Length: 182
Image (cartoon, rainbow, N blue to C red; front, side, top):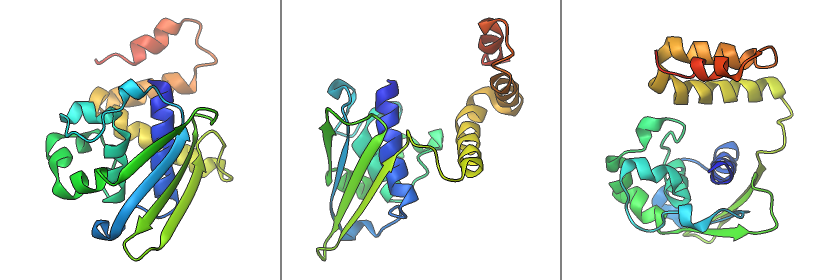
């Protein structure tokens, strides 16, 4: 699942970092994403799928990001979002081309607008940002958005603290216990 997540992250970050998110979706004629090879059987394409299964759908998540849905928020992955006509229409316009020799962290996206304009973006999530402190803030914000709904604020802090001390832990069980719901 990690290669899928990495490719997904690269594609979505490509959108967000390049300011492509929130384009007027009726103006989008097509979107093409080239990314590293991912196990094709994990991709759910074309069909509307239940919210939990949408997590593995690159086309769905790209359509969500393009329409301004917060893809870092797990609550965004639900049946109502999946069935949204704007997202369904846009999802059908997204084409994913897996490049077998590319890194899983690399993605390129080209969006063709109805007027013929093409907007392109490239991102490699395997390359650190120039501003590492800003990257850390972004990762911590993502961590909070994903972990807090599951472990609660105290549990998220407990796990974060364990991760910060990972080099000092003498037993991996400490990390496992920190990740358990209280």
